[in-house]
Figure 1 (cartoon, rainbow, N blue to C red):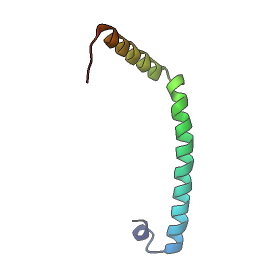
Figure 2 (cartoon, one colour):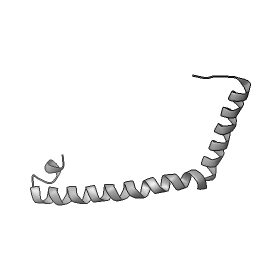
Figure 3 (cartoon, rainbow, N blue to C red):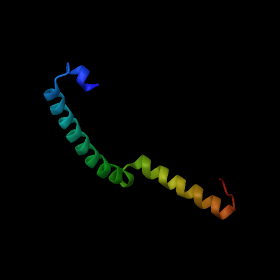
Figure 4 (cartoon, rainbow, N blue to C red):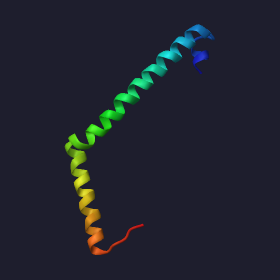
Length: 67
């Protein structure tokens, strides 16, 4: 635990926890926006989406149902 790593110093642990929570919140906010953008910008992801759509369309047209 953080208390053990910081030698049971509650003030240091409180500051460290606050910094960690702020860092996590900032990264989550940036990451969620980046994920959505990557779906439309990244060539590899676009290729995967096209392949998946073609396979799903082919299955529908052929009458194949995979559970």
